[in-house]
Image (cartoon, rainbow, N blue to C red; front, side, top):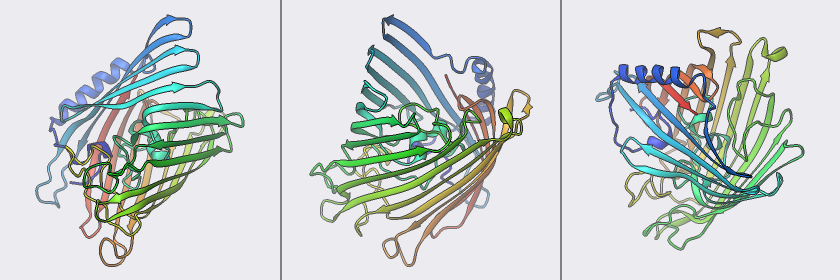
Length: 399
């Protein structure tokens, strides 16, 4: 089966649903929330004190690839998220986000205590997104495409998160953003390379040359649908001693990437649409050591921040255009994306094995990232394997 779904589903047991039921539920929910997609429930508890509650859901249908024996059409609910936030004091907040998966388990997505005295200097502690590339800081709901990019391979305890402490801030009238942190790290498991508990160090800086990005904290998005003119360049890096390999053969993990987003409203008030261009380049190093298998001694490969790091070079490039005219309830945004991961020479076979993926499709945007449908054709070719093609229909809503 082509790896088209977000990384949060990798290795999990598939729950098959009927395609018609997914589409019907999507339409019904779309009608329910389209007029109030920003209506997060808020309870005021006093001066500078409140509690908020929201929800997010993603579902998809993946076509049958008749060229690959055993592949079947499938429909699935990717995840259900519950968003909760609270403010106890003018400068003290907290976030607790939960995620329910198709295997029935609930995980803590984010659990953060936030001390935010100034815009330029804030301290967060708990489980959070680590400083990394734009795609990881987007999360699945704020990408320009539905499927999470396979070239974005920074490790995380869950969904790109890790447990630790971070400092972040915005300077130069919000044009410059930074975040740096220390986290529990990779391969903290008996038999893994990091049973000695070396921490992961991570950092990211970003500068916006046009409008500041209208996203909170150090989070990002890959399209703002014309809300601002964006030209942002980001640089991220991570380092962990004994971060890859086994207890017997271990190596230092290092990774860095540079990414950019250009989005421009064409004409006054985007009269002629919105053009988007995104790119990213990655380098992953494992000190010449092959990592242990993903999810070694864990319930599934997605749990525990264990194993699965590959050494190599990767990049992605994508472009999209938001058509200015409405078609029914929303607007159409055609898009294409290409990704390539080239593995380190000699470590995973002769030469430079590579995995590639090409996406072409369109978003039907009803309320920005809060209510969107995606139709996508994907051509995926794993290293030393034949290419596979499939169609994807995805839906997401959050409020």
